[in-house]
Image 1: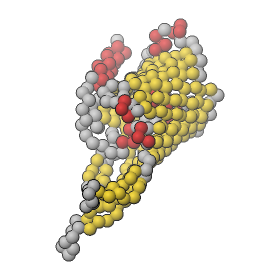
Image 2 (image 1 turned 45 degrees about the horizontal axis):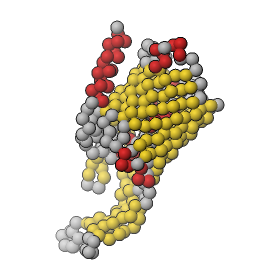
Image 3 (image 1 turned 30 degrees about the horizontal axis):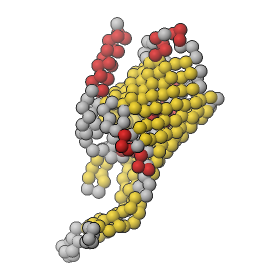
Image 4 (image 1 turned 120 degrees about the vertical axis):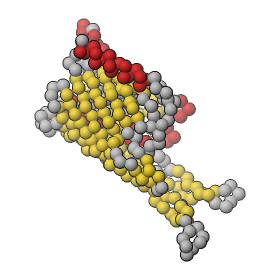
Length: 334
């Protein structure tokens, strides 16, 4: 009865999140921290809050890293985002004492937005002139730790340094009492922040059901020129289960994992991420993701192959008028 009540509460929570109106609520910066670059996670619609994924868990829920059994786990991903934007991520996790003292991990993320032609207002027929070309970029560096407090409950955290370099530009300087005429100056546009992630993972012991919670990008307000903004803070509740547990006679040699995340974001109303992963012979993986309350996308697809500690994953995401997005991830586990 207790398990049924818990499941009913979670179902009501996820259902209310899935049918929230899609209305923008606020402006946030450093949006690159919200982009999923891992092919496995993207193919499952980002529903990874309760899915153990070695060092890659630091990009979803740090607590899941505590489930890592290998000594070393390295994951590298390449994300060909729309508009010529490229995301590259890498993560490393080390399990020095077979989970006795927990698992430590490190992450790095780099974003290249390509070359952009600068312009400024000027008294020409067009009303503007070209300035120098610049190449905006973003980076994030993180260190995390996760530990099992019991055979069912794990916690984890990560601290990140995030920064954006938006090139240089010409600003108008207000006149002083001595010099009544406005003047121009070249200014370098950059900003940085320290952010924190926290997560928990609880394995119920009932039919393989796992429940998790995660807070990402918790930070102070960031100042940029004359404006302040927040990082893309999100709170996520996740639930997952291997559906083959319902039919044990079919569970030999393959599994069908279903994961559902209810996400509360600083910028948007609640929405759902739903992921499915079919595993055959512990080697071949087929994945599908469904996302609610999105404007230009609602599905994602992918597959993966893993054997002898090496794995390759691929994800494809149709993005409406923004064209498609493709990702590839390589993993090494020892």
